[in-house]
Length: 106
Image (cartoon, rainbow, N blue to C red; front, top):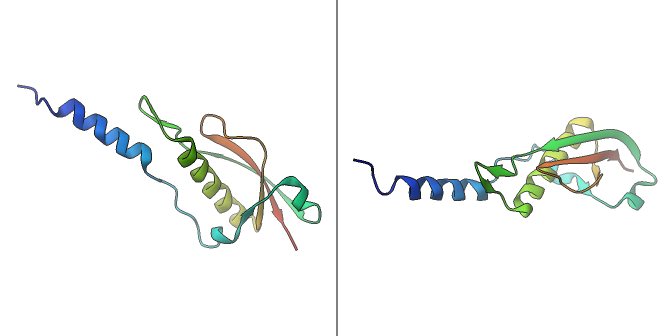
């Protein structure tokens, strides 16, 4: 006999997972700042990074805020690895993907 709680339990697990953060910041990532393009005029460009996270789990879409937060964390991690300290978003997130420009500023 099938448990009457199996489907609701699976749904609750999916909803819980949609709210979880799966990306941890690397050491130094908290020192990387996100700025507008006008603030990097005197900075050295170190390249770009394209970051990606899951924007949905199964058929349930994750919150835009959580996805954006994780994308930024991944971009900060990439900036640290590249020796940068500043990011500029190169467009908005699209389906869990976003591009950032990395800079080293004086």
